[in-house]
Image 1 (spheres, helix red, strand yellow):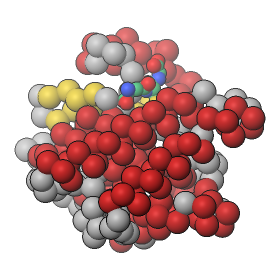
Image 2: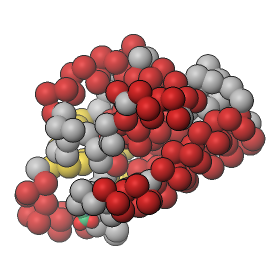
Image 3: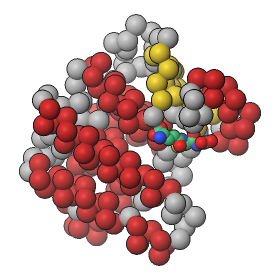
Image 4: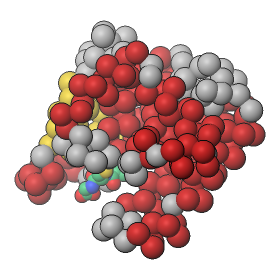
Length: 209
Ligand SMILES: N[C@@H](CCC(=O)N[C@@H](CS)C(=O)NCC(=O)O)C(=O)O
């Protein structure tokens, strides 16, 4: 791995079990083979760090990415910015860029809804979550490509979708695979990308779900 940036990016995020927003940026870095400093704040120590983060990020939340003298926040805009800087992962025309934006905005909605079901309320989960998977599947059907949203070209949508499927344990769910075949094929293909597979193997030690 190396870095196309003038200095090594510094990603600060929680040491969560691979379910959080910053982990999506880590997945993107794995795919793009970007070397970065991975600062992991133990969740239990957040109160002690919050003030320092607020000095960098007016929103006061993580992840924060330091890129030289730039401070970037909001995980999907971070992915979008990195994609532009790298000249890939963001689509090669306005229509492709729109398709990525569209599906990742649904991912953001999924995330906002999903965190409200974290207490383990199965009824709330069943009421709220399947519509997002159906939307992902629908947009993938509209694109008509595969295995990825843009065909063979990976975009920053893939790490987002990978996590949406991973977070509910659906990577090994045959029923899920049958119901959402395009989405399932996409996340399996993303997880099998050599650099991503290597990263996923290494992160197993931190896997708790
Ligand atoms: N819209 C932001 C949300 C950031 C966010 O809410 N981060 C959570 C962790 S995933 C956080 O820092 N929570 C602690 C807090 O807000 O005090 C993004 O997409 O990055």
